[in-house]
Image 1 (spheres, rainbow, N blue to C red):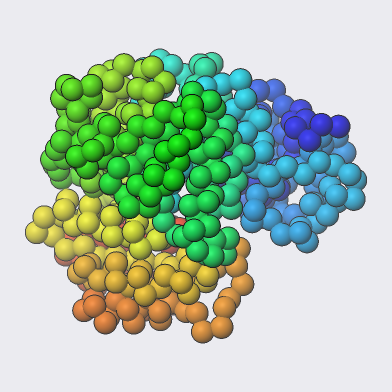
Image 2 (cartoon, rainbow, N blue to C red):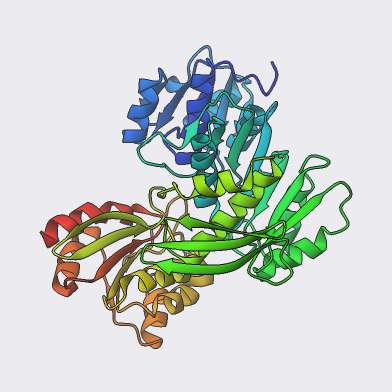
Length: 460
């Protein structure tokens, strides 16, 4: 049996955003898809509507007799009973990225990589190319507007995929066009140094098909170093983007307008101005990278720029959850210091005279151990910060690693900081702080995202 036999795949933890996207496309292509997840969710419901059989909980008996392979992510432990059962039965076990790479074959692949901004940029491309009638297939690390909207099986020749560097799995793809937004040290459980990060991104660049295009930031130091490292690659077209004077596709102006901005770029010697309807200079930069990638695929620049103006965001990426009593509540997935600073700057700019109140949940013990102080420093410009306990995700606790690392650093930089040890405490804390005109930013990669509706209800 071929390890790429995806006629009847079984997904362990199918409710995850990356896993569910691949499962959705396979179901649309006619595969008999099954899976399991720890709990019921809207994503699971969306998969079931596509005919996917999903079991709740993990058990050996959930693995169907007719499964052709088992698909896992790096988060699945060797002791998972379904994985153990698959190995005992001699079934092929595929990483999610292997399955996605198989789906991309035969398409014009466009892979979006970088330490930050992947989901937003991939979403921008999916939305704008769809608006232009190109009907791309896509797989995104977030939902566009509703559970299950993270992936689509399109009739067009383009396949847009978010390429995850966290476990090096992005080295499995062979795109025609690749975007690298930035290169920083993160995912400390898998990367011991910046040198290892650069080596991993170089390996990703080497996977671009001969004659293909690398779109890479001209502004980010880590990306510039990567560009220098791959400059001698034969058959590689490199397009640099950004505000730097030497950028191939140069940003001339970014003019903010509340939660949106107007961007002017220089394309083939002519100025092109378009709207980016999500806040922050970093999102304007993401849109310019998306524009360059589309141009590399032959999409007319002016048409794509106009279509990019129709993008309204993705869940958890500076997503407006609502307004109550004059207070706007926004949800952010930011969990790395660079992301925290970028999103906080964007909301500060949009808030004007209003205050910015942040509810932050550190994500992973390993990341907090390495970057907790930097997280606190990044949070310090907020008018008030509530810091929750660390969200462990797939990790076990580390001795001495707590949210106090973040709290102490934030306080050392003058931040008004409060510790909260449960989500239930937060709505009342915010209600005691917030005033009309304020912005509340729930921030982190864990279950802090659930707080938006509860804060709004408490404010009302």
